[in-house]
Image (cartoon, rainbow, N blue to C red; front, side):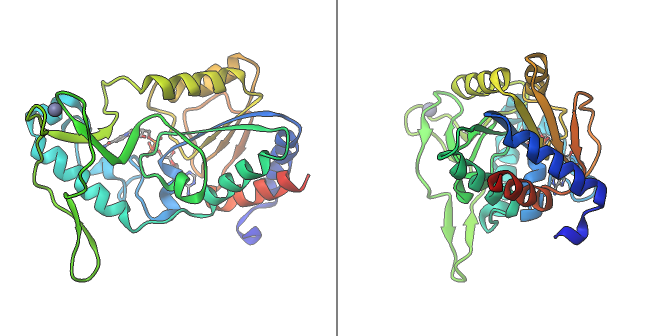
Length: 266
Ligand code: NAD
Ligand code: ZN
């Protein structure tokens, strides 16, 4: 792992670990990039990105669903199929390990994610979801959660298949939709409150694997900075986030295990 890192990145990891080890309130925001090494394409990465092939206005907006619910439902069933056999990677596990370690240290770590794949939970983390969860559905009219798992079934090869036939609500006959926050929709109130409170009160804010383009989530780093926090970014590519104090320009699955190992050894 170390062989993949330049001396400059190793030095920055040590610097970041020393800073983080000396602070108590840490807020972490993750995006699609933390799941890239699990084999889930990010939205904006060229070629492999889901973004390049489809218009977000057709697939991830209330208007898109109203125009063509079958297209949107099929897209989300396809994404469910895509993540069904994916597992957490070393970045997810490192964060879970840090949270576990923090139970016996004085650190308070709030993990917030824009991801809908549930890999943080699978790794053992406690996490706040800003953009919903792929595993959940609800009625698009009356909002009733839809529990039935009948839209997914194991085939003879034991592969989970997601049927793209539209489902309707038993209460109001509205179409069932994924419980995901689409563009133009408000974030869940409780989750956003948790995120704002943690960002405003933290001493260090860590942004991991997000292009920092989608608001309001992207504004959390600014909120933290305005309140005096240090900002650390983990991303192999540059982002428009101009308020970063420490940039760790490497894949999260390489940098995070080293960083957390250093912090928890302090
Ligand atoms: P993103 O795809 O915009 O950005 C991913 C970032 O991860 C990039 O900056 C990339 O450089 C970085 N990255 C790639 N590999 C990495 C690795 N191994 N380690 C660390 N970083 C790595 O994803 P985002 O910022 O999470 O997007 C924000 C939100 O935008 C999403 O949660 C989603 O809600 C929304 N969105 C939805 C759709 C859709 O539904 N169709 C499309 C686009 C955005
Ligand atoms: Zn309904």
